[in-house]
Image 1 (cartoon, rainbow, N blue to C red):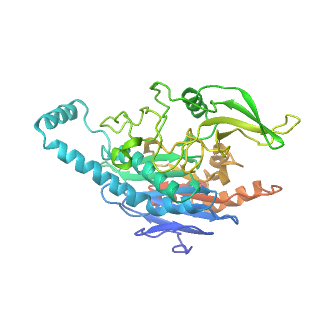
Image 2: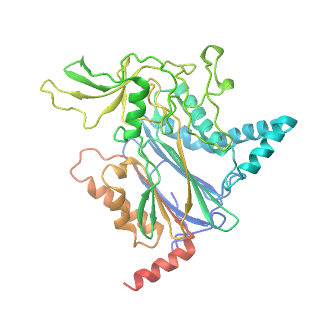
Image 3: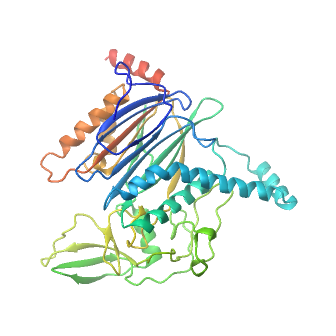
Length: 421
Protein backbone atom coordinates (compact mmCIF):
# COMPACT_ATOMS: atom_id res chain seq x y z
CA UNK A 1 0.00 0.00 0.00
CA UNK A 2 1.43 3.37 -0.93
CA UNK A 3 2.39 5.59 1.94
CA UNK A 4 2.27 9.37 2.12
CA UNK A 5 4.96 12.06 2.10
CA UNK A 6 8.22 10.33 3.02
CA UNK A 7 9.53 13.36 4.94
CA UNK A 8 6.74 13.46 7.51
CA UNK A 9 4.71 10.33 6.92
CA UNK A 10 1.61 12.54 7.01
CA UNK A 11 -0.92 14.06 4.71
CA UNK A 12 -4.39 15.48 5.11
CA UNK A 13 -6.64 12.44 5.04
CA UNK A 14 -9.51 12.65 2.58
CA UNK A 15 -10.23 9.07 1.68
CA UNK A 16 -11.14 5.64 2.92
CA UNK A 17 -8.55 2.87 3.00
CA UNK A 18 -9.22 -0.86 2.92
CA UNK A 19 -6.22 -3.10 3.47
CA UNK A 20 -5.93 -6.76 2.60
CA UNK A 21 -2.24 -7.25 1.86
CA UNK A 22 1.21 -6.44 3.20
CA UNK A 23 1.99 -2.73 3.33
CA UNK A 24 1.72 0.47 5.31
CA UNK A 25 -0.03 3.83 5.18
CA UNK A 26 0.04 7.06 7.21
CA UNK A 27 -2.39 9.98 7.27
CA UNK A 28 -3.36 13.04 9.27
CA UNK A 29 -6.94 14.27 9.61
CA UNK A 30 -7.38 17.76 10.99
CA UNK A 31 -11.13 17.34 11.41
CA UNK A 32 -10.72 14.62 14.01
CA UNK A 33 -7.37 15.90 15.25
CA UNK A 34 -5.65 12.52 15.01
CA UNK A 35 -2.81 10.96 13.05
CA UNK A 36 -2.97 7.37 11.79
CA UNK A 37 -0.43 4.78 10.76
CA UNK A 38 -1.19 1.18 9.89
CA UNK A 39 0.98 -1.72 8.89
CA UNK A 40 0.21 -5.33 7.97
CA UNK A 41 2.20 -8.52 7.68
CA UNK A 42 -0.14 -11.15 6.28
CA UNK A 43 0.57 -14.86 6.51
CA UNK A 44 -0.37 -17.23 3.70
CA UNK A 45 -3.98 -17.16 4.98
CA UNK A 46 -4.39 -13.37 4.42
CA UNK A 47 -7.54 -13.20 6.56
CA UNK A 48 -7.04 -9.82 8.32
CA UNK A 49 -8.70 -6.66 7.01
CA UNK A 50 -8.23 -3.01 8.00
CA UNK A 51 -10.73 -0.17 7.57
CA UNK A 52 -9.44 3.40 7.89
CA UNK A 53 -11.49 6.50 7.13
CA UNK A 54 -9.65 9.82 7.47
CA UNK A 55 -12.60 12.13 6.89
CA UNK A 56 -15.98 12.80 8.51
CA UNK A 57 -18.67 10.21 7.96
CA UNK A 58 -22.05 11.92 7.74
CA UNK A 59 -22.79 13.43 11.17
CA UNK A 60 -21.79 10.24 12.95
CA UNK A 61 -18.04 10.70 13.40
CA UNK A 62 -14.95 12.52 12.14
CA UNK A 63 -12.77 9.45 11.52
CA UNK A 64 -12.87 5.65 11.80
CA UNK A 65 -10.24 2.97 12.43
CA UNK A 66 -11.09 -0.73 12.53
CA UNK A 67 -9.52 -4.19 12.37
CA UNK A 68 -11.34 -7.36 11.32
CA UNK A 69 -9.42 -10.59 12.00
CA UNK A 70 -11.01 -13.35 9.96
CA UNK A 71 -10.84 -17.10 10.42
CA UNK A 72 -11.88 -20.05 8.28
CA UNK A 73 -11.26 -17.88 5.15
CA UNK A 74 -11.26 -14.13 4.59
CA UNK A 75 -14.90 -13.92 3.46
CA UNK A 76 -16.25 -12.62 6.78
CA UNK A 77 -13.55 -10.01 7.38
CA UNK A 78 -13.79 -8.85 3.76
CA UNK A 79 -17.56 -8.43 3.96
CA UNK A 80 -17.50 -6.69 7.34
CA UNK A 81 -14.75 -4.22 6.45
CA UNK A 82 -16.34 -3.23 3.13
CA UNK A 83 -19.91 -2.95 4.44
CA UNK A 84 -19.62 -1.71 8.03
CA UNK A 85 -19.99 2.02 7.33
CA UNK A 86 -22.81 1.54 4.83
CA UNK A 87 -24.69 -0.68 7.27
CA UNK A 88 -24.14 1.77 10.14
CA UNK A 89 -25.45 4.66 8.05
CA UNK A 90 -28.53 2.63 7.13
CA UNK A 91 -29.29 1.69 10.74
CA UNK A 92 -28.79 5.28 11.92
CA UNK A 93 -31.21 6.44 9.24
CA UNK A 94 -33.84 3.93 10.33
CA UNK A 95 -33.55 4.91 13.99
CA UNK A 96 -33.58 8.62 13.19
CA UNK A 97 -36.69 8.20 11.05
CA UNK A 98 -38.38 6.31 13.88
CA UNK A 99 -37.49 9.06 16.34
CA UNK A 100 -38.86 11.75 14.01
CA UNK A 101 -42.08 9.80 13.50
CA UNK A 102 -42.57 9.31 17.23
CA UNK A 103 -41.90 12.99 17.87
CA UNK A 104 -45.04 13.80 15.86
CA UNK A 105 -47.12 12.14 18.56
CA UNK A 106 -48.15 14.75 21.17
CA UNK A 107 -47.96 12.26 24.02
CA UNK A 108 -44.60 10.77 23.00
CA UNK A 109 -43.26 14.22 22.24
CA UNK A 110 -44.21 15.40 25.73
CA UNK A 111 -42.59 12.35 27.31
CA UNK A 112 -39.37 12.87 25.36
CA UNK A 113 -39.33 16.56 26.27
CA UNK A 114 -39.57 15.76 29.97
CA UNK A 115 -36.95 13.01 29.62
CA UNK A 116 -34.56 15.39 27.86
CA UNK A 117 -34.85 17.92 30.69
CA UNK A 118 -34.28 15.27 33.35
CA UNK A 119 -31.47 13.56 31.44
CA UNK A 120 -29.73 16.19 29.28
CA UNK A 121 -27.44 15.13 26.44
CA UNK A 122 -23.87 14.87 27.76
CA UNK A 123 -22.17 13.34 24.75
CA UNK A 124 -21.11 14.38 21.27
CA UNK A 125 -22.56 11.18 19.85
CA UNK A 126 -26.11 10.85 18.50
CA UNK A 127 -28.28 9.31 21.21
CA UNK A 128 -29.33 6.46 18.92
CA UNK A 129 -25.76 5.55 17.87
CA UNK A 130 -25.21 2.69 20.33
CA UNK A 131 -28.40 0.98 19.23
CA UNK A 132 -27.43 1.53 15.58
CA UNK A 133 -24.01 -0.04 16.19
CA UNK A 134 -25.59 -3.09 17.82
CA UNK A 135 -28.03 -3.48 14.93
CA UNK A 136 -25.15 -3.09 12.46
CA UNK A 137 -23.13 -5.87 14.07
CA UNK A 138 -26.20 -8.10 14.10
CA UNK A 139 -27.01 -7.36 10.46
CA UNK A 140 -23.45 -8.08 9.30
CA UNK A 141 -23.45 -11.27 11.35
CA UNK A 142 -26.63 -12.45 9.64
CA UNK A 143 -25.35 -11.56 6.15
CA UNK A 144 -22.06 -13.38 6.68
CA UNK A 145 -23.82 -16.50 7.96
CA UNK A 146 -26.00 -16.65 4.86
CA UNK A 147 -22.96 -17.04 2.61
CA UNK A 148 -20.62 -19.41 4.43
CA UNK A 149 -18.95 -20.63 7.60
CA UNK A 150 -16.33 -17.90 7.89
CA UNK A 151 -16.11 -15.69 10.96
CA UNK A 152 -14.29 -12.56 12.07
CA UNK A 153 -13.51 -10.35 15.01
CA UNK A 154 -14.42 -6.67 14.74
CA UNK A 155 -12.84 -3.83 16.69
CA UNK A 156 -14.07 -0.43 15.53
CA UNK A 157 -13.06 2.96 16.96
CA UNK A 158 -15.01 6.08 15.97
CA UNK A 159 -13.50 9.52 16.62
CA UNK A 160 -15.31 12.82 17.05
CA UNK A 161 -14.33 16.27 18.31
CA UNK A 162 -16.54 18.09 20.78
CA UNK A 163 -17.22 21.84 20.85
CA UNK A 164 -14.25 22.36 23.19
CA UNK A 165 -11.83 20.62 20.85
CA UNK A 166 -11.65 17.45 22.93
CA UNK A 167 -11.29 14.19 21.02
CA UNK A 168 -13.89 11.55 21.86
CA UNK A 169 -13.61 7.87 20.96
CA UNK A 170 -16.38 5.29 20.82
CA UNK A 171 -14.95 1.77 20.92
CA UNK A 172 -17.12 -1.21 19.90
CA UNK A 173 -15.92 -4.74 19.48
CA UNK A 174 -16.50 -8.48 19.32
CA UNK A 175 -13.60 -10.90 19.58
CA UNK A 176 -10.00 -10.43 20.63
CA UNK A 177 -8.56 -7.75 18.34
CA UNK A 178 -7.50 -5.57 21.25
CA UNK A 179 -7.40 -1.77 21.49
CA UNK A 180 -5.20 -0.12 24.13
CA UNK A 181 -4.50 3.51 25.05
CA UNK A 182 -1.19 5.08 26.11
CA UNK A 183 -1.35 8.03 28.50
CA UNK A 184 1.29 9.92 30.46
CA UNK A 185 0.65 7.64 33.42
CA UNK A 186 0.65 4.24 31.71
CA UNK A 187 -1.51 2.01 29.53
CA UNK A 188 -5.21 1.16 29.62
CA UNK A 189 -7.04 -1.63 27.79
CA UNK A 190 -9.96 -0.09 25.90
CA UNK A 191 -11.34 -3.53 25.04
CA UNK A 192 -11.63 -6.81 26.90
CA UNK A 193 -10.76 -9.91 24.91
CA UNK A 194 -13.83 -12.02 24.20
CA UNK A 195 -12.16 -15.25 25.17
CA UNK A 196 -12.81 -17.76 27.92
CA UNK A 197 -10.02 -16.22 30.00
CA UNK A 198 -12.44 -13.31 30.39
CA UNK A 199 -14.36 -14.34 33.53
CA UNK A 200 -17.39 -12.27 32.53
CA UNK A 201 -17.68 -14.22 29.28
CA UNK A 202 -17.26 -17.57 31.01
CA UNK A 203 -19.90 -16.49 33.53
CA UNK A 204 -22.28 -15.50 30.72
CA UNK A 205 -22.03 -18.92 29.14
CA UNK A 206 -22.30 -20.71 32.48
CA UNK A 207 -25.31 -18.71 33.66
CA UNK A 208 -27.35 -19.00 30.49
CA UNK A 209 -26.36 -22.50 29.41
CA UNK A 210 -26.06 -24.23 32.79
CA UNK A 211 -23.09 -26.04 34.35
CA UNK A 212 -22.31 -29.63 33.46
CA UNK A 213 -19.20 -31.79 33.87
CA UNK A 214 -18.82 -34.93 31.79
CA UNK A 215 -16.64 -36.51 29.13
CA UNK A 216 -17.37 -37.40 25.54
CA UNK A 217 -15.22 -39.54 23.27
CA UNK A 218 -14.38 -38.05 19.88
CA UNK A 219 -12.07 -40.28 17.79
CA UNK A 220 -8.97 -40.98 19.87
CA UNK A 221 -9.34 -37.82 21.92
CA UNK A 222 -11.57 -37.15 24.88
CA UNK A 223 -13.59 -33.95 24.93
CA UNK A 224 -13.83 -32.73 28.52
CA UNK A 225 -16.87 -30.58 28.97
CA UNK A 226 -16.00 -27.83 31.47
CA UNK A 227 -19.25 -25.90 31.50
CA UNK A 228 -22.50 -25.59 29.59
CA UNK A 229 -25.09 -28.27 28.97
CA UNK A 230 -25.01 -30.25 25.76
CA UNK A 231 -28.72 -29.68 25.29
CA UNK A 232 -29.36 -26.32 26.91
CA UNK A 233 -32.88 -25.16 27.66
CA UNK A 234 -33.90 -21.49 27.58
CA UNK A 235 -33.93 -20.20 31.12
CA UNK A 236 -35.90 -17.30 32.62
CA UNK A 237 -34.38 -13.93 31.84
CA UNK A 238 -31.68 -13.01 34.31
CA UNK A 239 -30.65 -9.38 33.96
CA UNK A 240 -26.88 -9.06 34.39
CA UNK A 241 -25.16 -5.89 33.22
CA UNK A 242 -22.20 -7.68 31.69
CA UNK A 243 -24.19 -10.52 30.16
CA UNK A 244 -26.24 -10.85 27.00
CA UNK A 245 -27.88 -14.06 25.88
CA UNK A 246 -28.70 -13.14 22.29
CA UNK A 247 -27.92 -10.20 20.03
CA UNK A 248 -30.69 -7.69 19.39
CA UNK A 249 -33.36 -9.09 17.05
CA UNK A 250 -35.45 -6.65 15.05
CA UNK A 251 -38.85 -7.82 13.89
CA UNK A 252 -38.27 -6.82 10.28
CA UNK A 253 -35.21 -9.11 10.15
CA UNK A 254 -37.04 -12.18 11.46
CA UNK A 255 -39.53 -14.66 10.13
CA UNK A 256 -42.84 -14.82 12.05
CA UNK A 257 -41.92 -18.23 13.45
CA UNK A 258 -38.67 -16.93 14.92
CA UNK A 259 -40.06 -13.82 16.59
CA UNK A 260 -39.91 -13.76 20.36
CA UNK A 261 -40.41 -10.88 22.78
CA UNK A 262 -37.25 -8.92 23.52
CA UNK A 263 -36.40 -6.10 25.87
CA UNK A 264 -35.91 -2.68 24.29
CA UNK A 265 -32.79 -0.63 24.84
CA UNK A 266 -33.13 2.59 26.78
CA UNK A 267 -33.15 5.83 24.83
CA UNK A 268 -29.67 6.60 26.11
CA UNK A 269 -28.31 3.72 24.04
CA UNK A 270 -27.67 1.57 27.10
CA UNK A 271 -26.59 -1.86 25.88
CA UNK A 272 -26.91 -3.51 29.29
CA UNK A 273 -29.92 -5.69 28.57
CA UNK A 274 -30.74 -9.36 28.47
CA UNK A 275 -32.76 -11.18 25.82
CA UNK A 276 -34.54 -14.45 25.56
CA UNK A 277 -32.83 -17.20 23.62
CA UNK A 278 -34.25 -17.45 20.12
CA UNK A 279 -33.33 -19.14 16.88
CA UNK A 280 -32.05 -16.91 14.14
CA UNK A 281 -33.81 -17.43 10.82
CA UNK A 282 -32.21 -19.23 7.93
CA UNK A 283 -29.65 -21.36 9.76
CA UNK A 284 -29.45 -23.73 12.66
CA UNK A 285 -28.38 -22.80 16.17
CA UNK A 286 -26.52 -25.50 18.04
CA UNK A 287 -26.15 -25.85 21.79
CA UNK A 288 -23.08 -24.70 23.63
CA UNK A 289 -20.50 -25.86 26.10
CA UNK A 290 -16.93 -25.00 27.05
CA UNK A 291 -14.29 -27.69 26.84
CA UNK A 292 -10.82 -28.84 25.87
CA UNK A 293 -9.52 -31.91 24.06
CA UNK A 294 -7.35 -34.36 25.99
CA UNK A 295 -5.50 -37.42 24.74
CA UNK A 296 -5.87 -40.93 26.15
CA UNK A 297 -3.37 -40.12 28.90
CA UNK A 298 -5.49 -37.16 30.00
CA UNK A 299 -3.10 -34.50 28.74
CA UNK A 300 -4.62 -31.41 27.16
CA UNK A 301 -4.38 -31.38 23.38
CA UNK A 302 -5.73 -27.86 22.93
CA UNK A 303 -3.75 -25.17 24.74
CA UNK A 304 -6.80 -23.19 25.87
CA UNK A 305 -10.50 -23.98 26.44
CA UNK A 306 -12.80 -23.38 23.49
CA UNK A 307 -16.54 -22.89 22.97
CA UNK A 308 -18.00 -26.04 21.40
CA UNK A 309 -21.23 -26.55 19.52
CA UNK A 310 -22.95 -29.51 21.13
CA UNK A 311 -24.30 -31.04 17.92
CA UNK A 312 -21.58 -30.29 15.35
CA UNK A 313 -18.61 -30.29 17.77
CA UNK A 314 -17.30 -27.24 15.94
CA UNK A 315 -15.26 -25.07 18.28
CA UNK A 316 -14.04 -21.47 18.33
CA UNK A 317 -11.68 -19.63 20.64
CA UNK A 318 -13.60 -16.36 20.68
CA UNK A 319 -16.83 -16.07 22.66
CA UNK A 320 -18.16 -13.31 20.39
CA UNK A 321 -17.70 -12.87 16.66
CA UNK A 322 -19.39 -11.99 13.38
CA UNK A 323 -20.40 -15.00 11.30
CA UNK A 324 -19.25 -18.46 12.37
CA UNK A 325 -22.35 -20.23 11.11
CA UNK A 326 -22.70 -23.56 12.88
CA UNK A 327 -20.78 -22.40 15.93
CA UNK A 328 -22.25 -22.66 19.40
CA UNK A 329 -25.20 -20.41 20.20
CA UNK A 330 -23.20 -19.00 23.12
CA UNK A 331 -20.97 -17.29 20.55
CA UNK A 332 -22.85 -14.05 19.98
CA UNK A 333 -22.42 -11.02 17.74
CA UNK A 334 -23.52 -8.45 20.31
CA UNK A 335 -20.72 -5.86 20.70
CA UNK A 336 -19.47 -4.27 23.85
CA UNK A 337 -19.37 -0.48 23.56
CA UNK A 338 -17.44 2.08 25.59
CA UNK A 339 -16.96 5.86 25.33
CA UNK A 340 -13.64 7.56 26.10
CA UNK A 341 -12.63 11.23 26.22
CA UNK A 342 -9.05 10.95 25.04
CA UNK A 343 -6.31 12.79 26.97
CA UNK A 344 -4.35 15.30 24.85
CA UNK A 345 -1.28 13.04 24.80
CA UNK A 346 -3.12 9.77 24.16
CA UNK A 347 -1.89 7.17 21.71
CA UNK A 348 -4.15 4.27 20.71
CA UNK A 349 -2.97 0.92 19.39
CA UNK A 350 -5.44 -1.45 17.70
CA UNK A 351 -4.04 -4.82 16.69
CA UNK A 352 -5.16 -8.32 15.80
CA UNK A 353 -4.33 -11.23 18.09
CA UNK A 354 -1.27 -11.91 15.98
CA UNK A 355 0.30 -9.22 18.18
CA UNK A 356 -1.39 -9.92 21.52
CA UNK A 357 -0.71 -13.66 21.45
CA UNK A 358 3.01 -12.89 21.88
CA UNK A 359 2.98 -9.52 23.64
CA UNK A 360 1.22 -7.92 26.62
CA UNK A 361 -0.38 -4.49 26.59
CA UNK A 362 2.20 -3.26 29.11
CA UNK A 363 5.14 -4.51 27.05
CA UNK A 364 3.72 -2.72 24.01
CA UNK A 365 3.45 0.53 25.96
CA UNK A 366 6.92 0.17 27.46
CA UNK A 367 8.46 -0.34 24.03
CA UNK A 368 6.64 2.46 22.16
CA UNK A 369 6.02 5.23 24.70
CA UNK A 370 9.12 7.17 23.59
CA UNK A 371 8.77 6.57 19.85
CA UNK A 372 7.53 9.89 18.44
CA UNK A 373 6.06 9.03 15.03
CA UNK A 374 3.19 6.62 14.49
CA UNK A 375 4.77 5.08 11.39
CA UNK A 376 8.04 4.40 13.21
CA UNK A 377 6.15 2.97 16.19
CA UNK A 378 4.03 0.71 13.97
CA UNK A 379 7.11 -0.66 12.22
CA UNK A 380 8.87 -1.21 15.52
CA UNK A 381 5.89 -3.08 16.95
CA UNK A 382 5.70 -5.30 13.86
CA UNK A 383 9.41 -6.17 14.03
CA UNK A 384 9.19 -7.01 17.75
CA UNK A 385 6.10 -9.15 17.19
CA UNK A 386 7.81 -11.12 14.41
CA UNK A 387 10.88 -11.56 16.64
CA UNK A 388 8.65 -13.04 19.34
CA UNK A 389 7.48 -15.67 16.83
CA UNK A 390 11.00 -17.02 16.30
CA UNK A 391 10.89 -20.77 16.83
CA UNK A 392 7.11 -20.89 16.38
CA UNK A 393 5.91 -23.06 13.50
CA UNK A 394 2.98 -20.86 12.51
CA UNK A 395 2.97 -17.05 12.38
CA UNK A 396 -0.48 -15.49 12.47
CA UNK A 397 -1.64 -12.55 10.37
CA UNK A 398 -0.49 -9.30 11.99
CA UNK A 399 -2.42 -6.03 11.61
CA UNK A 400 -1.58 -2.85 13.53
CA UNK A 401 -3.13 0.63 13.62
CA UNK A 402 -1.55 3.43 15.68
CA UNK A 403 -3.46 6.64 16.35
CA UNK A 404 -2.05 9.76 18.01
CA UNK A 405 -4.35 12.50 19.30
CA UNK A 406 -3.50 16.10 18.43
CA UNK A 407 -0.84 14.49 16.32
CA UNK A 408 1.06 17.52 14.99
CA UNK A 409 1.50 19.04 18.45
CA UNK A 410 2.30 15.72 20.09
CA UNK A 411 4.87 14.90 17.42
CA UNK A 412 6.74 18.10 18.30
CA UNK A 413 6.44 17.53 22.06
CA UNK A 414 7.61 13.92 21.82
CA UNK A 415 10.58 14.97 19.70
CA UNK A 416 11.52 17.61 22.30
CA UNK A 417 11.10 15.04 25.08
CA UNK A 418 13.37 12.56 23.36
CA UNK A 419 15.88 15.26 22.50
CA UNK A 420 16.28 16.10 26.16
CA UNK A 421 17.10 12.52 27.13
